[in-house]
Amino acid sequence: MRVRVATTTVLGITAALLAVPACSTDTTGTKPDTAASAHTAKPADAAQQAAPLTSAALETRLLDQSDLGSNYLRKPEHPTQHDDITVIGCPALSELGGDAATGGTLTFPHKAKATFTYGGSSSELSEELYSDSATKLSDGIGRIFDAMTGCPTYQVVAGGTPIDMASQKLPTPHGLGDEQWSQLLTFSTAGRSTVVKQTAIRDGSLLLIVSGSPALVDRHLDKALTKATAAS
Image (cartoon, rainbow, N blue to C red; front, side, top):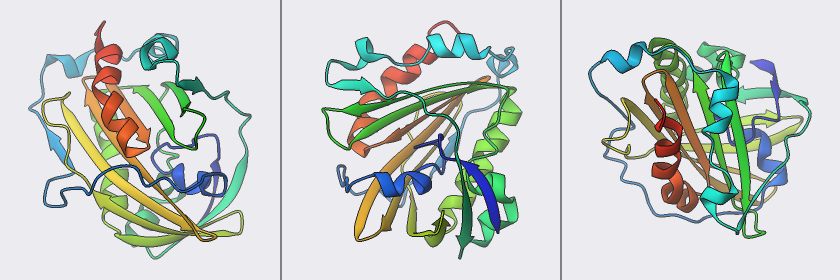
């Protein structure tokens, strides 16, 4: 499978695959409890029927430096660039098609994103907010997480650079939102390995994805969800 993807989706659902050449080793975090489910859900309720939020409204719900502290610096957004991506050894991702394998299915009509570096190091924290119907959000993010965690190891070739991938389900943050997904990605290239945690929470018509250094994700996930849903 050979596709075109946007490299601006760094630390999105599969953006870690594209960011590897620019990232240094980050092994912060603890061993996951692999026995726990990577996805939990609550019964449907009226909140799921809420009208989608606009991108402008989502932007105001993102974490900012005042929420995170002085050690965090927001990264500027870069113009969209594209690399050829080949996925090897993961039939589940291949069956979903190129867009799904590289995060391209996250093209919900309403979205906002912010990425921060921490303490001048290579550690990063990325927050993405999407809004659409509850069904579309659940189906879109669920299929990608299921496919990725269904392949413990695989390889991608991004712009000619081979990247060895390992994915692992993580315990989900119970009690947050209506549905939750979480995984740990380890990707290695040119003798370097990087660990990225990705946790997604759907709350009604809003989808939150927090990605980055495992310790930073754990530290700020609750805060991100609280701000994202404060006015819901």
